[in-house]
Length: 123
Image (cartoon, rainbow, N blue to C red; front, top):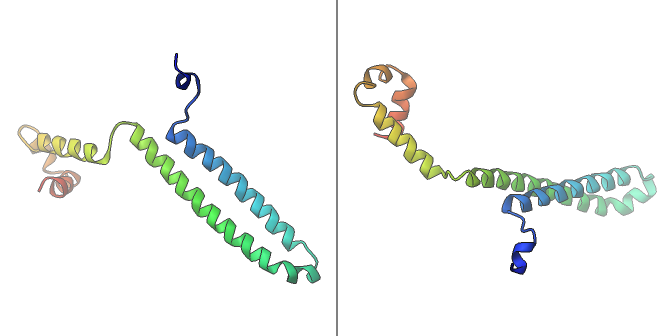
């Protein structure tokens, strides 16, 4: 047994989940720090205004990064299912072609949704 097989190797989704958790904790920490600055007396507020602006910028950056990792995780989940967008589109085209011949054509030609999909993907 090789050394590599004995250790756990996280998948891409596992890595994204861990990154999400870290970002959530970091956002909580930054929000707590920001609330701490807002509770300070007026004389120290002037001194820490620059730090407060830096924290707000970091917080906004972390929230954007969290959203990006969530989107990446969702994309990875779709990728793990084994179906890519191209394969799904090819299957839809195949199905529409099959349904646009006899005996199904009489049923589906009257459906607006079917005509719309047929025009979009086949014609």
